[in-house]
Length: 353
Image 1 (tube, rainbow, N blue to C red):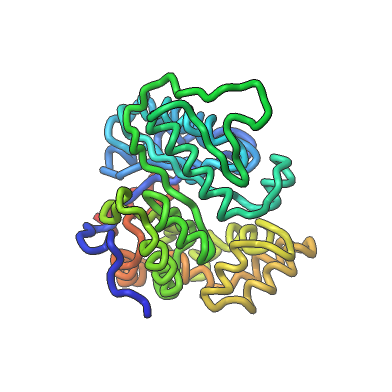
Image 2: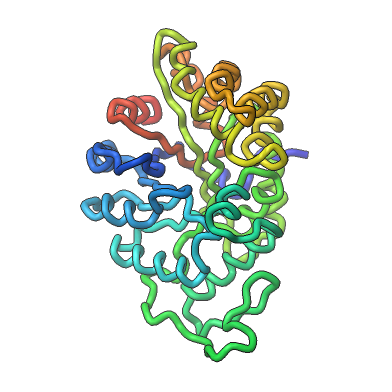
């Protein structure tokens, strides 16, 4: 049975907005600082950076966030396999101090292509890896003694080595610094509700979110009492394109969806393909994937149906978009992340203000 209300929904306010800066292409985006400044002026809640196998998530966040005063600064996401838990805890403690306690650590496993093809790590036992990674980071930030951890994926200090347990020299500004988990599938989504302070949903389909609500509810039943539940947050991407021509508006997002559904993984494992299959678009997604992996990217882009775009985006004439806003306001996310240009941020502020 799907619950009507999750713990964090009982006293929830209206959905807030975040600025999604993502990761770079070949070079830093020229308008990033302007977008950050405008997001703060518009009263946005936060700004978020990400990483794949190019620009990292932490450095741009520190650089562009240095002139802000109110925006929370978050990673969506920093890759678990790209840093040891200790390196991540060090960076989190550093950024939280520099921002005056406004940092949010968003973590994610990425996928086998990046984990194995870029970081040279093994992509296996992800639930246990994530669980242990969170535990080590939290132990370091709580600074309750020298770090000692024995798990199946992480052992600190290294068994048989010459190192001894150490304590973080920095006194964290917040021992309970919020740590969010990016998750696509049911088990990882449940894990977010169990061990994290927030869930980074990425693509979100308000009309097809029943399985996600069920997964969150399952995770909350295992959540430790000390973590609570009322302050849990959910962040999702807001893809917004207002245009009198629906097809032209949808065209804005077809290339991105083709890349994620067709190319973010392999023919055997792609979490984004699985996500759209759960939404009811397995036939459409299969066609996109086959064309993309076959090397015909233009055809894969054309194969992204308008209904697939509409499921995860607000697109089309202004009247249509306005009519669909309430659906997003009352769905699972407490925070919607929207990208530039500046006009896009202003439109989002008007629609969700």
